[in-house]
Image (tube, rainbow, N blue to C red):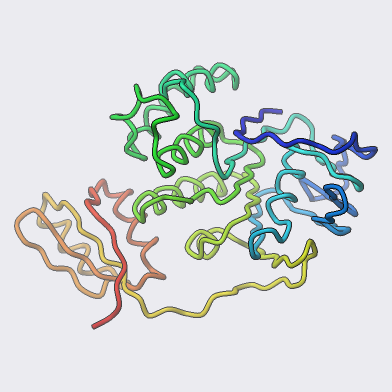
Length: 305
């Protein structure tokens, strides 16, 4: 299994129950957790959690800081071990990747780090994929910058790029969009959705509404180390607008945009175009632009006037 994380954790004692890998062909699940508990001294962080996830499914853990969701994610992804209970990977030879909530800042340059990731993954043939992701997340100008000099958002982009290099079987994400602008978020959602369509299982701990709305099949709400609710949606319907600023080179592109049933308005001035849609439909327009090769200059959200 492949893992690349930026987090380390100090354990109080050696646990007696560890994660195992088995060939359980009878189950449709890709991962199963049974009776997971985690304590740090007298502090009980997770209390007897059981959980399963199928291949190609996307699951979100939600809850306030300190409720245990990130700890469970780290246990499921083998970054740390439970105090009791068991996690089982139900298929052999799984590719597992992880987007941590932060990387440790050090003196290694972005380009050197990402090339080392390619070597660790033994996937030098994915060099073209790396170049694509560098451009998608607008990181080319920072390739020679040491990680320690990157902003939180740029450092998180490095974490995202290293995890998306592989079409992994399991992708774990801990607040993956922390510090990201709206356009980077939309690029990320598009990339991960494409992985999901190919069968990647997504397990995430996050607060980001857009990410959960776009990706999650199931939502688990955490409180004090326990799952207290499972809901299909925890968010009210919004009336906010998604406002796109596009670079339109051909008149026919403008005409086709006007005909899209989820577009409210489309105003063209020279080679630039302002397109307005509902926030809930923004991902549709984003995907359309990517497919048609229309360059997105800017994206923002605003109230309807």
